[in-house]
Length: 155
Image 1 (cartoon, one colour):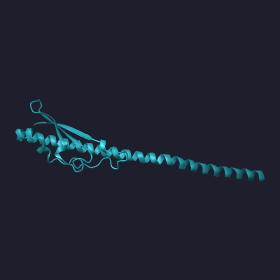
Image 2 (cartoon, helix red, strand yellow):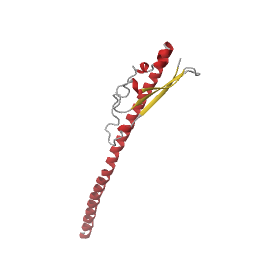
Image 3 (tube, one colour):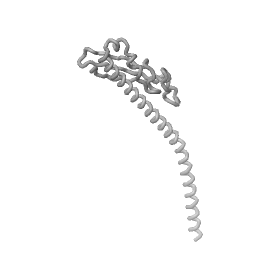
Image 4 (cartoon, helix red, strand yellow):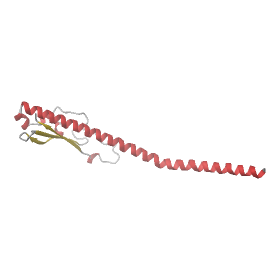
């Protein structure tokens, strides 16, 4: 009976030691996993923001190309000389703030079908564009540039 009691008490002590060891190992592993999860969430968030900026640029270039095509139908000479007036009213706050961000890539009125290609550029903190990425942990904001272009038929 005494031996049985000693065995049981030894088993209980071993269980307590193992549970203490498991909790220590869990805490140590969480010290590595939680920072990795935070970095992953940050990276995913920045990728989503970059994709949103790209989609906005694509919309702005499409809108500028459509406006150029419509303006060309009404007054071809004016549009050829000054495409900036067409882009002047295209604005998406924080991303596209100035007509200076637009570029006339290709203008082919004699091609079949006649087309115009407009490109818009995004550079953080230029022309009133917002800062990206925010927060800029790695210091890549000054090197980050994005552009999108759209081709539209001149109907």
